[in-house]
Image 1 (cartoon, rainbow, N blue to C red):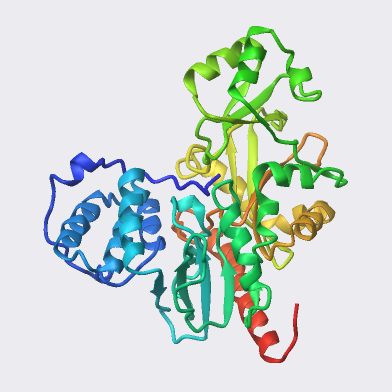
Image 2: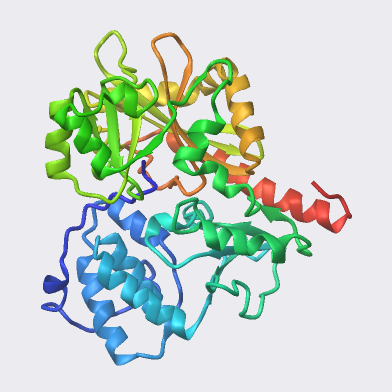
Amino acid sequence: MLKSFHFSNAARCGDITLHLTTFTPTPEHPPATAFIGLAPFLRMSIAGIDFSLQAAEMLDLAQLHPDDPELWLNLSTILLCLNEQELGLQIQARALEMQRVYRIAPKQPRRLTLLMLMVPGELSANVPIDCLLENSDIELIYYYISPGTPLTAPIPEHDVLLVGISAADSTFEALAQLESPLANWPRPIINPPEHVPQSERQTASLLMQGVPGLVMCPVQRIAPDTLRAIATGTVELATATQGVNFPIILRPVGTHGGHGLERIESAEAVHGYLGRVQAEEYFLARFVDYSKADGLFRKARVFLIDGTPYACHMATSENWMIHYLNARMYEDPQRRAEEARFLDDFPAFAARHGAALKAIAERTGLDYLGIDCAETRDGELLVFEIDPAMVIHAMDLESVFPNKQYHMQKVKNALRDLLMRRAADHARGITT
């Protein structure tokens, strides 16, 4: 999923320190002391711009301004984009020691202020909502909660609050700690913390069982010792997994973006997988072949905003494990044309799977939720994952994707309308 961000830049820390120069702000690259979030770096990456030099320049500038938290958090973001996880998280921690609240100013006169609660961590830990709010009239405030006492810093004035924390083992405690202070919050809340855990991979797969027209294979946690027993034939797969047979898919718990994700066809293949991918625990699920008659696989990203589905993209690939970038969507005009048809015809897709999509919204209780999905050979909705922290954007060039801006504008409008409507209802004393 593109919750884990795929950036084309490949600079390493060692390279960064070789190119320290003075950072010169431009209209495209705002002053370092203004917090700019993720969106500018994602936009540069999609445009094919190598921003590793910007990272080097920003590192140089941060060394000259050690007490500038906005600068340090910008530097952390750019390093995380460049897959410099360890250094990026260290710098993020330094920024958060100085300050827990960061603002992204609106590009138009402000109509609404959205406060987003976040946790420290990698880019996949929080909802990348700023990628949809570029050039809008909404002020976005990041509030990084503190462990144990999550809302200790002064709470900024705001109109709507969004719990922007994704569901994972590492965030469950933080989400639980937010339930009590948010129970009687004086402003409307998007994605209440008690509902976010419903989108965790294993929890969601069990929650979606029994929905007519919806297939989401139950995900099980499995220990390395059990997998080794399966690999050696000491234990049968079906016995260890309550009836699951090969082929299966395996991935380490806590990973995203296909890291360590493989299709496994036999016990012998389990042995080879364990030699390549070491983890303390793994997710296991049944593999469903969702290829069509032409042998190709197609995966769509759909977002539910206040229960209404919106198409964001659709990728076609020879590979069952589809990511938008590895599917050659930017290189293949025929695949882009097929995606354009999917976006144009999405109302029919949404109607076919209306009951399944409605069940996802109702069972999770989330106002803003991403779904990676496909259609089975029998025409059912095959759901791979649900997650509010999936990345969606309107940054692709219109010359390459002529109709995508139109459809993504619907998504942006739906998000803005949700925020404005909740704020207006609250002002009128209407609760939802």
